[in-house]
Length: 404
Image 1 (cartoon, rainbow, N blue to C red):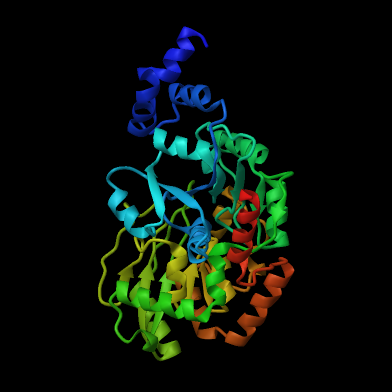
Image 2: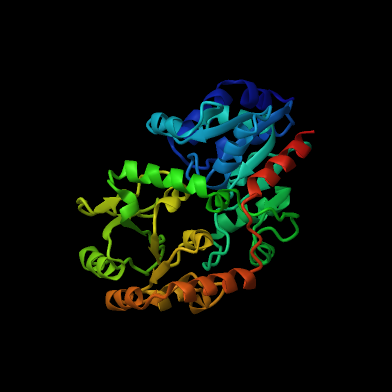
């Protein structure tokens, strides 16, 4: 080993490089990348039952969350490590995780050490390849992604697409829930990665009536909703807009009046901003209008609602498994389609579509539950969906095989 390499690997630059270049500046710096390549380029000793987990929001959410919960429920002999974003978010993030999970700070040496020594990586985005961490023989990378039957085309800038190409090279398995999703993965990032056709862990909850009821009670408690079963809880959660397409607000009070007339129930509306809009996208709450932007995992909120309203967000394609109503409010439909693009025409979904508030109110008034349920079944059949509520069991069984 040359003197320069020895200094980089063993000296002050390495010891402080992670903190300064990765954690402090929050950039994918050349020096931070180099120190990782030099230090982790040679395989570290793998801890056989160690599993490293990360979600795109660096919290306990989405598919990784439910895989972890199933491992704990089955009392598997595993060591689970995940991440928190920074010292300011630690306390809140720690509260979300079960005590069995160890947390390390994002983009620090502790995180990279955990990755380097874990038998299995579980990811729902491109987290594992974003910072130049080498993956070595004997390590397994499972990607669950964070969408399913979603209509929006996958893609990003050049840097993002380069990372996606790298993901294809190092991913061992993609976990899928439909033939549609398989085709999307083949078309985009994972051109030759094997599929585990298990369904998505986060969607198992929709097939378990007791868990659905439990989550409903938690939603009522969090939002201070008394007599929740006698009330109609509506969620409005639009997607993030990246280009010239702009969010168009709704008149929630007017919407509430229409819904109460239709369903003859008191209505509670929960508004949830996309995680990229949480800080800037505010409104005034009251006893029937609630801010759900910081509730935590979206999947924990969905069992607690009766009706969903969105635009192009993928959460509606999970929620449709409940057969509960979904409505799409799409005032910027043509522009969004031009800039982002859809995999299939939006009018082939079973969801009523409205471009104005008046059209949305009409859609509520004209809604027919039986017609909607038939449409949901036809849509799921057409997309080759194989969700059945047993994804977590299958994934944990596969993890056990990989560990052995």
